[in-house]
Image 1: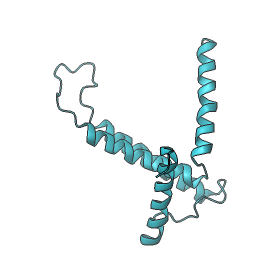
Image 2 (image 1 turned 30 degrees about the vertical axis):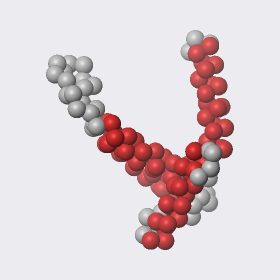
Image 3 (image 1 turned 60 degrees about the vertical axis):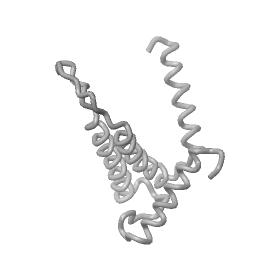
Image 4 (image 1 turned 90 degrees about the horizontal axis):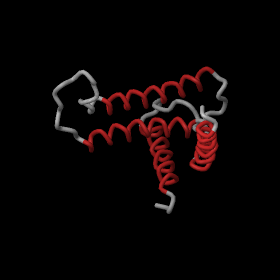
Length: 127
């Protein structure tokens, strides 16, 4: 493992994708990274990965029992470990999506900084 945990996460996900391509052919039936994002099949793969991530987030949300404003009783049990596991599942799909579109930790960080500046500027300007 390196000093950069985000890089480690990307490396782990890439190695998982490579392994699953060998052990379970067809699970990622496209080259990684995708060669042409304008092609129908490439966009289908991107959409599928994104929707799988969203499904995992919905699974995480199922652990939240006290969000309804009209509910009087409260469920005192909350399994944070299971909640986090579902979020990690979602993150894995979103990370796989980044990998197949050729985004690594450096590109993601630069995009993150750019967006952060944009939203902070909006706050400064009263957006």
